[in-house]
Image (cartoon, rainbow, N blue to C red; front, side, top):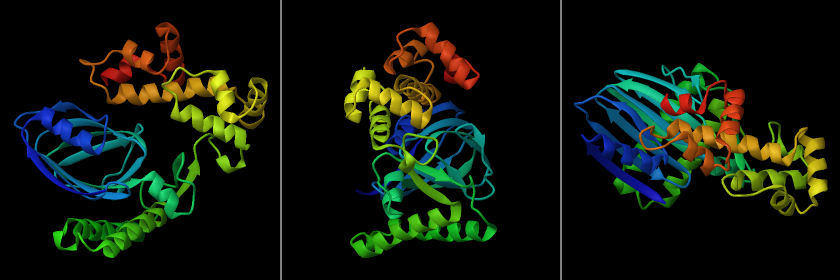
Length: 309
């Protein structure tokens, strides 16, 4: 779907709503008045879009990239950002992987090229269903790649924001293809299927089906019976298959997936509006004590620390 939307506001709540139109689940954690927020998004929301943001005051923002990878370029003021808790070098183009990005900024300009992971998968000839991005680096592989990417990103922003070109489908498609190809090359991107830390193509078909079912239904009240049915195997059969392929059980795989989703939920939630108990229950954890213990063991902090950070 083609988009070209421009907004300016001095209201924090409205600014948060605007960010959430681009990145659902995002939230301002801090914002100092007086406050001016500007946002413009152009492009194709189903494949490639270019978002420009300007924030006049000191602010802290948590953004959830869900099925999307962002490539950012910052200028002016101060801007610091982490992607899934990894600090990024903002002096050159930087990669915002699927997951949680946190930024601390003041009086800055930011351009983010958003790439749909499914579109990236199709571009490289992979299956878009359950695609997972794998990158060689959080920045361009070389200085030449960084310079070229900046040129491509600005070219795409110009094409997508020129109303006279809105009816030229071939030009827009060629620009989209150029952006996808340039991102793959400049950042060393590859695409795999969800289900294993290693390439899923090496996994048995039944395990891949079960893993995808778990990812798609982690918040639902599912268990080993439903997982086995999705894999088209018996309960005993899928248990053995997981043990041989991944050295774990389907229920443990489900628990880890739910913990990961709960962490992403806590990281983007507002403490005044959400509790740890609500998040835990929304991801299938009925025993809060066990959830907290498993969470601390997995992430070396309590759920409340993640929520209030």
